[in-house]
Amino acid sequence: MSITPRRPLRSVLPALLLLLAAVLFAAPNASARTEAAPTATLTEITDFGTNPSNLQMYLYVPDNVTAHPAVVVAVHYCTGSGPAMYNGTEWAQLADTYGFVVIYPSVTRSSKCFDVSSPQALKRGGGSDPVGIKSMIDWTVSTYSADTSRIYATGISSGAMMTNVLLGDYPDVFAAGAAFSGVPFGCFATTDGSEWNSACSGGTISHTPQEWGDLVRAAHPGYTGTRPRMQVWHGTEDDVLRYPNFGEEIKQWTNVLGVSQTPAATDSPVSGWTRTRYGATGDRAPVEAISLQGVGHNLYAWGMASRALTFFGLDSSGPAPQPQPSACKVTATTSAWNTGLTASLTIANTGTTAINNWQLAFTLPTGQTITNGWGATYTPSSGTVTATNATYNGTIAPNASVSIGYQANHGGNSAAPGAFTLNGTACSAS
Image (cartoon, rainbow, N blue to C red; front, top):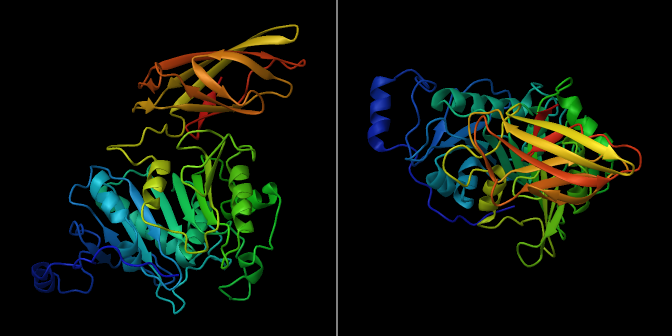
């Protein structure tokens, strides 16, 4: 895959800084961990930590980098590089606007493809490329006091496959990912040292959602915390990583995130695009999938990163209005009669930042159907329901709460829902 450069690659280091580095830091790679990178230029960082597969790390820090910035890991395609990803996508320009930091990992092996197939790569801390990328993140967090709740991965082709792998290996590190023309976690697995899996690339590997989800969960056994949200993109005419992989990714990540495979919303934001959202209807649903009719493998186009940024929640200054784990609590009660009930839900913001444009997702007990509601818009009326804020209660301040409710028919089970997610993040419930 190739991408036409859209902006010139700026100098890695001004000449004066190179001269000073040579004079003051004569030891190889001295101060790599103690000196911040220059701003507004692509910089290679060396000695960033454990790096079993000899990856290179490139970093872009904007002039206006925020305090405790978010971090985006932008992973290149086969035959590409970190500088090519910097040149061919708009992540650096978006960083200039919103103040986050971008890491561009770069492969040194001859194929220029990331390892998404070896047993080492498909296990947390197992070795190979994911470990090196995790070291890059750790270096950046340490150097810039980055916000560990706002770390994201995105990639194209091989980089999209690595995005799936990173979110599987390190669910406690990433808040979300966006994969352009990829395959599910574990689909490319091989045991013979080959980097290529023809069955997966050909779209002939299919599993149940549970089986796909189990592959992800096996990468970090015993992990029970919040899982990162996932956005996937695919062209219907992809002849490199065939289109069935798109549906398999959806099966995998809806299972991992515990949401229905039935879309909560479907629309067409651009002619020829079909966008489905799972588990919620807004911009930061647990899973979002965009299918591009008649488009091949090289689907990435300028402007798509902005849509991924919206999914991440980074297209506004400061921290995204996403509740962090345990930063929300929902109290649910019901009052029932014969075949009907009234449910009251109180959504409390137990975090330290305001929650804006909220969407509360929950699953109704079997046999219940909402007939009307207040304080929110409820869709659909049964199964996995998303309650979207009204115009007058769209912001929940820290230590504040919002009360909503609905009436429903029931077939004998009048219980309240037992689990809730707010903007894709699990809340405690009582």
